[in-house]
Amino acid sequence: MALAMRTISELLKTSGSQYRIYDIGRKVDKLSKETFTKIEANQIPYPLPSQGHAYIAIAFWQKKNSQPYLWFVKFSLDERGLLNLVARDHFIAIIIEALGSDLGTSPNERQEELLKSNPYHFTPPQYKLAYLNSLVSTEVKHDSSQYFSGALRYLSGDSTWEDWQTVGVQGLNDFAVRLSEKSYQKILVNALPHIPSPVLHPLCSALENVKLPVEIIDELIAQFEHSAESKNGRQASDQSFLLRSLSSSCEHPHVIRFIHSLIENSSQVTLSEELIIVLAGRCWQVLSNEQQIMAFLELLISAHDVEVFQAVFKDLVAIPALRPLIFQCMRSPNRSVELSKAIGLLFQR
Image (tube, rainbow, N blue to C red; front, side, top):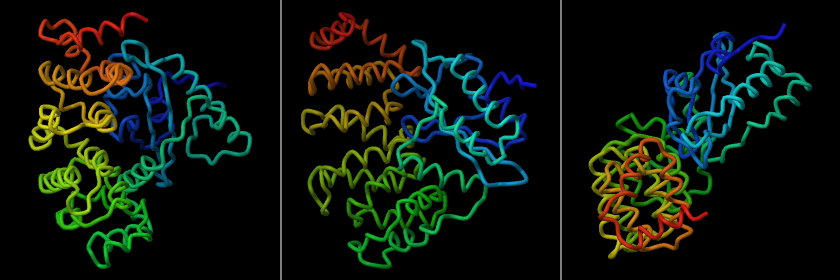
């Protein structure tokens, strides 16, 4: 007899699973069970849309077996940002057909084939998968990966900074999820001026998911400024990663001041297309009022072509928290002629 499950949450609870829900569209953000229940009931729009979709990771495990399973699910969103419930129901039907209600069962060959044919499955980028693996391991109180000790030794300065080839990306992510420990915070502050780009880039990709203490925030900002001035061996290519590393700390006053300074002083500091995309895609929380969004949109149209403006504008206006503020900007009599023209072009298609 077929099981009638109305929501993914219900499916997980009925199976007796412990579970966590994460958004992994822009970066890795935990979604509370209460928020996810409201999303599934279409009571609220999806809070962190990316390219018109919800990118969701579901980690679940059984009490009898703490080894977690991971599902990666992509659902389309409507123009209001609400979840496509027909797609959600189809996904549930596929899972039940393949596994029934026992989600902890290792699938046989036929079940594997059904799961692999799931049209809602997607494969996340490796850097997000590495961080999620580290995060879920800490959630279920598993040990760190075999690469953690090597990463810790390197960041502690136990070898030369040029001897980075054996540092594992998974180990850097294991380090990042443990940054609540004061001793690790001190290690990172001391290491940041020295570590070369091949280590800095994956480390920043992990840090973008972590709410950082002020000492690390200040050092990351200092390294960004050094990269703009080519000091300490920092390259301009490091900038976008350093900016990304601040993504989850955008509510901190030091980050707010730093990003506002970047936008306001854009005539003195060139913000590349890559930095603009990071600001819009990962640091959008800083744009918390009409004045700040207007300044960003004016910068966008003055420094980049119409295609870049349109892509970034459409990305920002899809974020529920920003949409009403952007509509205010669109109606504002204070917008420039250039911004008015760029907005007008959006409605000519």
